[in-house]
Image (cartoon, rainbow, N blue to C red; front, side, top):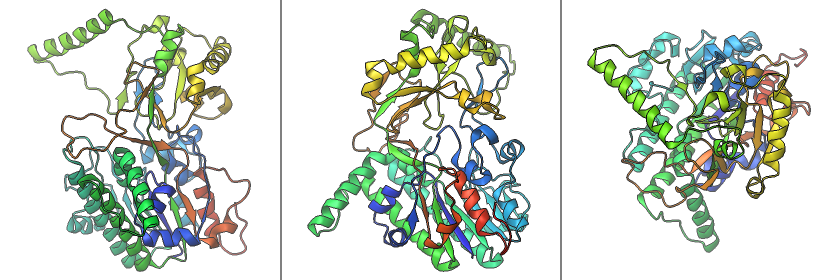
Length: 496
């Protein structure tokens, strides 16, 4: 194999260096690394696969539907990516250069394209532990039989799990099967380019980042004292077991495939989630957002309850809602609101939308530039914002001319990754209550996470790849697309 790319969703160099992962650490010690700066509004895997930012490939974690409503879409698929992007996907680029590919479990690759090689598409949504291999997720289709034989699991997510250790055990087993399947197919087809992604590891890091940090600190202390580290709890033991298993899987891949070159990447890193913010609170306090008062919130809930009740009594079918459609969590008077904050999961991107024609709002296009500047000025003068190292800057106007500029927030809040913005708590800034030892029992607990997306994804590469990186390359995951493409250029050709 000419190049093996190891993707680790949420891949964080600090964690790989701090956990008991001797094989992986031996690779890191002799490799080069680069500190990237991701714009977390943009999906990292889509950047790596197309060489384009969300402004050009529509790869936003959350985006307005632009239909005059306050509906936002969290949906994004391979077909969305290919229809939006002006660049061909990485597998097409490599096939056109005469290289065969083997790709397993990389997000935004399904339904699997026809390729010279094989693709097992990355899972998500409802493709989890059903044991059924959906049509279109494997190319060539005959390899479905191998996945079924191996009891392949596409994905796992936290909702519905009742215990930390049992959840982490499922993750270890699923990732081991994914790795074994990749090796089996690669031995049969011998691809020139391999890309294997450990996606589910990010679930461990979101849930247990606080405990991961505690483990790493204790491991450092034990090394200094010349003693072995002993986990304090079953949760810590499960965390250690996960990273030992991950290291063994990486070792198995390298020993089986013997790549000439290698690249480790993440779509983002994982940061400790220390504080949670809500821009709607600040906007409400400054008169930019007219939030519902308690009586109006009660009436709104009563109205929704009555509508559901009448639908059931009359045996009517409820109007189906499109999948992955989200609405602002803050209830506000739309005609009196000039701006509202980002909400739900926007990739740990904090921003402000002007309530303009995209939402049938009252702000005209001619008013927007001055309003953006006024909000930024007031926010940056706020002592609480300064205390948490928050700074508001115009954002959407910086992407003038990009095909998907209208889907962007007008303002970006530049901030530490440790501050996560949503609209779940009615407080401008509040400490994360989950910064404490993680309990084994997950029953009845909503959003127990101590980790969030970080801007500096894992990017480690074998020394022989250094010459394929140019000073003019973007310092984010678009670099992957350029580096890999140049590596497979034929001798004498002009690299892009």
